[in-house]
Image (cartoon, rainbow, N blue to C red; front, top):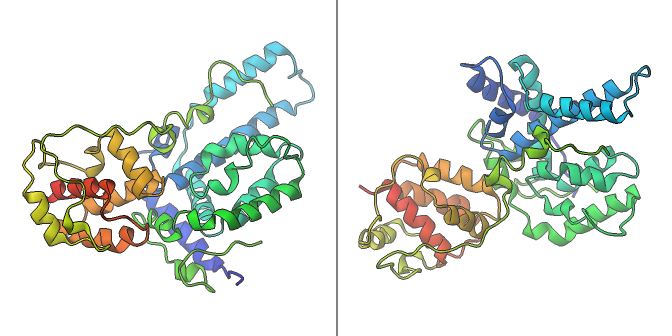
Length: 364
């Protein structure tokens, strides 16, 4: 079935989303910086698409400088000085609302397209790549792809794949058919936009049912990196290498799968009875937000085992659970949004530990 996109809804939604984000941020500030953008919204994909557009503008500025026919930009001293200047400039991102808001709007549109139509999105990316440098383009932009990245990253560093654009376009489509069942849920990806403004997938996909959409078929570097080269390092939660998970040693730890978590659905009453009987040190008393209470190994375990490797989804889940108001409401939310949607094994250690944290959040 060919997907029919409601472009008017997308345009209006992205415009309202950008306005709300900017009203919130610029209410007390005149400018936004690169570091501000990294944490601007709860959707890492939106944040990184804004940075990606700034990266493109940064490259355009360099190309504009080098196009002047009266100066020798190939001279080593000029090249080194210019590269140093551009890298320093990249670390001085400073934008007012009037110039920044259109970037947010465009980033939201791209994020929605990537969530719903990953094949078309990545094929468009390949079409933008310079002829003969598709692999280099994908490598350079890999850090900006946070959703459905498995659809394209398999092409990077493929020895002997070649530089034929049509071959890349066909490979994206073929690979999607193989991996589509393992990709993150579209509904959950788009839910990360909801903290600003809820997105109605049924209005966007006029011919769909609110579920997964079908696809529509070198310069040398200097020692001081640019902001765009280091942005991945500065957002460890999004892109850090996955460490070995070492379980914490806890005294009198209960069995990892209490009866309250059987039969595929969580029972708030049974869970409360189970967790209230636990008496080991540190069981109760989470103050503040759940995200601030996670140990590093827990963050990586939950991301990998419960949220399909997507740190964005974990972050959004913790925030919405924080706002639930009670343990019963939090369990209802988890049942509705995550247990079935992400096919959780409700008897697993990861689920037990996640629920234990939620219980501690709302324990008296």
